Length: 524
Image (cartoon, rainbow, N blue to C red):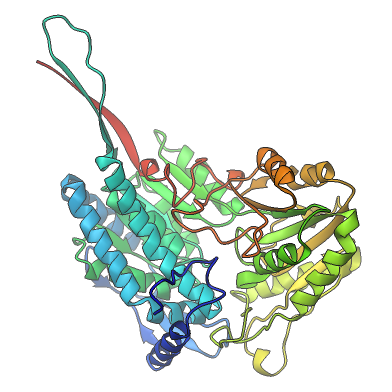
């Protein structure tokens, strides 16, 4: 691979040819080995359940990717017990040794990036570059957690001495792991949003139980294998699969869970938050719960930058990103020109098999999302003006998958409820505003506060940063108006209903979320 090329979501638009060649080789290998049964991993052992479920590709629902275990409440309890048993020795291991093991896991992910990315594309429907990006980010998130552990010297800090005459006081602040940490990951970034929190929990000394989304057990099983093959001790990580309403709820309800990281919808996240609050004492709850992300465009903006950035963020991964640009507010003098360019670029997006080199948009994740698209576009066609897309694709190569074309909507009344509802689909609404203050008012008038983008002058940009209510903000960015965060570059997290901690993953303040502080005072 080109020596100076680093794959991120911002650089993925100009990859070296080798990435395509190696992805295609891995894809052929993966396709030749589909349909196998995969076990859970509990206490280092393969575990099978009486009941199974089948994982089919959203690209072609005739393609069986694998058979997975429908875990039960007992499997949940056993996984937590295994983590509890493994925790003492793992937490007492020198943090430098944990860092070494986790770096080895990241290296193994790198070695398997093409095979894992091929599975991701088939299982989620990501285009090849976004699939490669997800796996690359997984390794980088783990490495960033290791870097932060080293940078902060294990989070051990010597405090001031008490002014006690005749005595020598030593005060040490040490951050210590909570115990057993639960990671519940989403379908859209099953690599990064499993590996990121799992890496943070593990490197700080917690033992973990991982539960993937039911739509994406395959790629998370591959990540679990990377942890296993790196030499993590039995029980330090556990991988269980099954329905959220049974297995997932048993994990949430268990008093054996000392902390949880959940990424997903606002409704499910808030239920977890409330369920956790009913326990006998507070437990840390790290939630990332979606967004309704705006892009604001000044009359002074570069039209091409704005158009390219908005389209990339609106329709990457079929709009199924919590960071997707789902609302656009354009100052009136630039409205017609930019809207025309948005329509032109959107109409050029190739929709189809996302493993194909020239395809930008694959299918949505499942039948439920497919039906949601039909329902939302029907409602939007009655209230606004659908400029692109609006109808599911059903002919030819689209007949066996969940293909929804990119949809731009104008003239939707600004008091319509879909300006505030997270659709999680390739649907973006566009509005004309009189000035930037009006745009900012609309931008902030939602329950979410995850990401936001702006296009305008340097002075206007500073105004935007100071007034927008969001955890991740971008200005004048053609690589993506609201998407494309990367660990160590743009830590990712939200305000208001988008997050529970006010600290962003892949950033300076994230790792301490997985530890609690102990002060050690010794008087001599």
